[in-house]
Length: 233
Image (cartoon, rainbow, N blue to C red):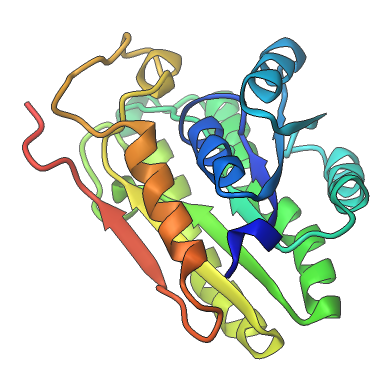
């Protein structure tokens, strides 16, 4: 697609991969709405990169309906959803906390479904759209202590395949991006301390891939792209 005609919603857009993706798309001429739960951080990020901020919690169905409606109004159209809102919760199986598990699933899976559901209504009606789900290499292979997070990211694989099957005939491209370890606030938020390993991926690496996927001519699309650090230490 021509990114100067892109009208984009990025969930979880106030930091990390979401914020950097918004920055790169705006530089290329796209209109971009970023949404997040924390108002102050959202406003600061939007001001820095020139995005439109809309506060919303993707777990809340009413807020998601209002979000997507406002997105279409603010940009006078809407044709790209980047489903990025998610966080990590890790635990050995025998120590999984149900409240923490339910909250993460509500964000990582239910939130992804709700935003896509409301967006797909618009895309189907106009017979055009793009959905990019941000998965993870944790959704490709399980690991010790990864039960909660890996479950949520394996689920994204299934959602992407279902939506691709349902929406392809409406000229809607459904794609997935699977980053490996990226230096953001993700590790700190998951309780593992700040990660600043210089050999790991950066948000700009993932944002570049997302931009490239969208820029491919609308007659074709890449189903999924997995990005690994070359030699993480």
